[in-house]
Length: 476
Image 1 (cartoon, one colour):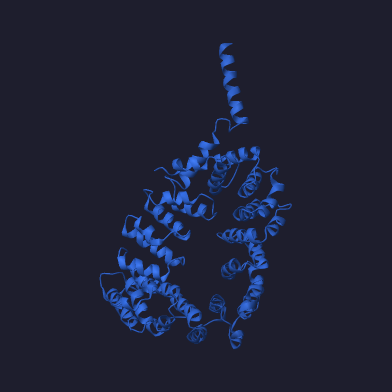
Image 2 (cartoon, helix red, strand yellow; image 1 turned 60 degrees about the horizontal axis):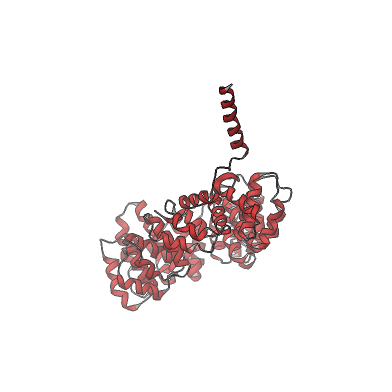
């Protein structure tokens, strides 16, 4: 009998654990643990990047602590976040330990449009960056007094080829011939190394907006086939920065294309650059099927009408059109375009296409949450439900929360948790909902793994424990 009673006691404990699996879980401790492993002392820069996108109150504390994290990638990512928040870049550079870290911050600031000429000049004068970052600083600073330093960089055989190329392009932009020498110098590289350096230099020159330098490049790059990636990048930059040279270069590329069936990407260069297509070229573009006809109509639409014209190609799943339209829609907030992208991406089964659904959902969540809310009504596709809620969660507004409230009592656990997280983003939880959020953060709500840190942050905030928890989250 003793054995029987002991066995029953064990079974009883197991039954309780199964019926109340969170009974022994402290949601405060679990939330701290989730955040520490995600964005804190044991976290990763990718996670810091994801949570920073939510613009959470108090998150600057994580970034401030991140600059002293033992992990160099996290230190750099935290510094980039602080720079985007308005902290002076020279001050942030002084807090980073190595030349590589400081250089990474400089290049990231340049790529994100955070590097003003005056700041670039101040940093360049201290000369504590690697040669590529230094060339970028001197290019952005745009000071006549830097010509000698640029000339030394362009001629220095010990610097990276990209450094020498950026310095040469900067000199060329300011009236000193230097690009021809750089192209001659890289002519002895292997074809793969040569093309990689040219491609990287083209991208940097385009970002710098060097119209004069880009106009000098076609004869230096030399003849290339119509489907060559470097030729396409050069033509696109010319179309954007120097259209007078870009249109003839585009026409030449079109003329060199041997088959009309291969011509669509050439037409998309005009779309990407925002230039009108020469009407006399229209007959070169096929229109035998719905897809080719839709793309042709997009290419030959007037630039200010292309957003609307792109919808037909988007609905047919034309990926290059979706890439262009997504950037356009994020800038303009055009609802019809965002809806078309969301619907086409959400129903597609192609790998990677879900990125468009999420980006479109996030833009719609801010611009028109009710448009997203309508897509939840009688929706059974779990992927679409998640896409919609991701947009509403990203918005973090009362209007987005209102679209989520009807689903707080949904039969599906994950749907309930996604709705709860949307409401929590708007900061309006009762005690019962706050406890449920703690369970979801601890892993008991079926949330996608990447949303658990957000749930943990919001739970700690709603519980009044965030400030006290941050030192534990960020400890090494």
